[in-house]
Length: 73
Image 1 (cartoon, rainbow, N blue to C red):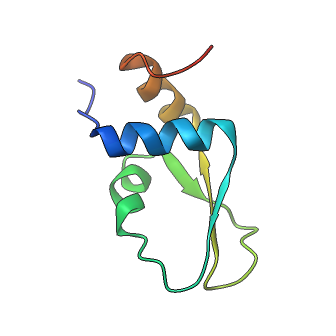
Image 2 (tube, rainbow, N blue to C red):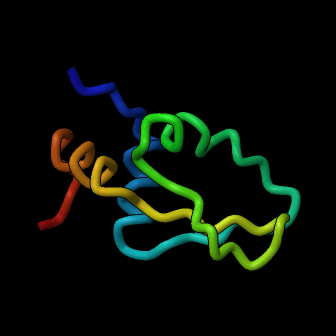
Image 3 (cartoon, rainbow, N blue to C red):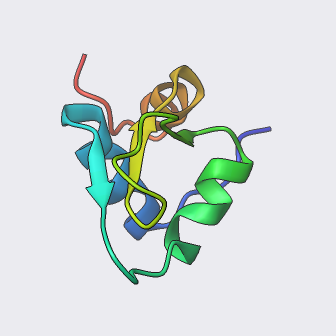
């Protein structure tokens, strides 16, 4: 069974599919927690600093996008 993604999560996955994203400073990462827990995105071990996080979409995230018709193949 596929999890239901919110519109915000679909939009985030689409943007990560195009390009990895670095989140800097005191930004709250809660928006990303569920996607990371589900294995749809990952934090890169090459993040610039402890306060900056580089997020990338995983194969599972790409599959979730395809399941909702959101991926551009």
